[in-house]
Length: 148
Image (cartoon, rainbow, N blue to C red; front, side, top):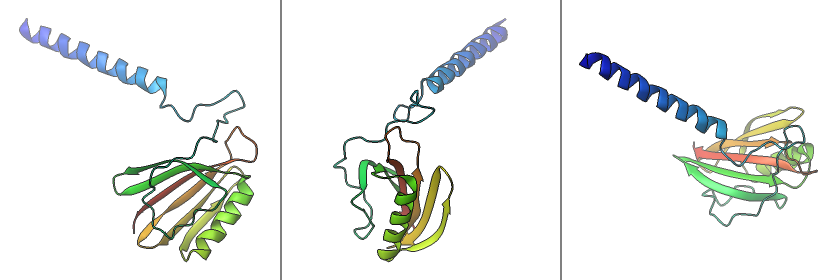
């Protein structure tokens, strides 16, 4: 009888944990909520004053507004937006990476997103650009930088 009671308690505990995980997943993580405009979300937010931890020579064009900066293990991450459409943001940022003396490892440009992978100053990473902002002429920017 004791064994059946223990199994019942373990099963009940597992169901409670599972339900909690499902409810938490359904609530979402915040910042990137879809709007009624077909999946677009707001990108323009106040600039952060947090240090990025990126090398001093890393290109930070004037059109880029950094809204968040954090560390994920050895990887530094910047979130923000570029005050123009995707094509302009991609072309200008790629040029600035070259001009800063970084090596462009590869690029990919599609209709609604683009990536620029780079290496330089002992770091490597990727600049990801998305045209999923609800504001016009605004491109979402996500940049990673990790030890090379």
